[in-house]
Length: 66
Image (cartoon, rainbow, N blue to C red; front, side, top):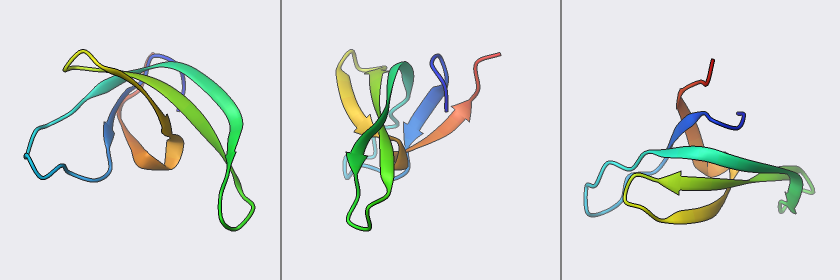
């Protein structure tokens, strides 16, 4: 994943809402997981107007920035 990629959550929400977002920022090795692996924290701007911070394992790439 890289800045500018279009992403969506791997898990669907109960509301059935289709969420898409753009990666604005990547903070490498921000999280340490339960098995001592490192994960990046991504700043995502979502189509509903909210900006959130998410671990990279939470998201999947829909379309890569070229």
